[in-house]
Image 1 (cartoon, rainbow, N blue to C red):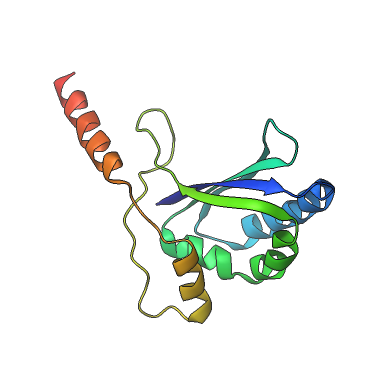
Image 2: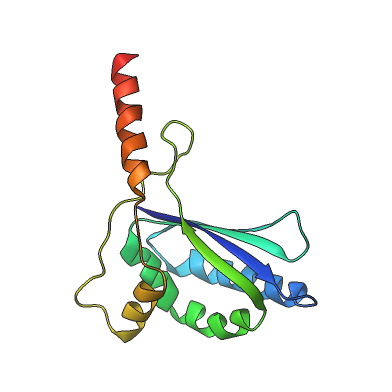
Length: 144
């Protein structure tokens, strides 16, 4: 599993265009990506602040999303509207989220130039503290 939360700040005056592009991207992604589990956009509390929650069967599914024709077509128009962007890998809390754990996933040796570009831009990582928290949660479950 590969799950992430993108933090996106849109330039002033660009919100309507951003929302139109991501609606199309949402529809195209859900229609054509078999490894996609969740892909949602959310408005934040502040004007121009958005979040995108994404979850894929694995890191390869995320990379396939990034290099998909609909995503590649939307990437530059979207980046022209973005003032700030940060991608954060996240891990579901067992028993409080429906998705499986985020798993380690190295880049595939057979990926092409575009896949390697996105893998370098968005390297996948499992935080060390997640591993400890998972183990502690399993131990607590065994005791209960």
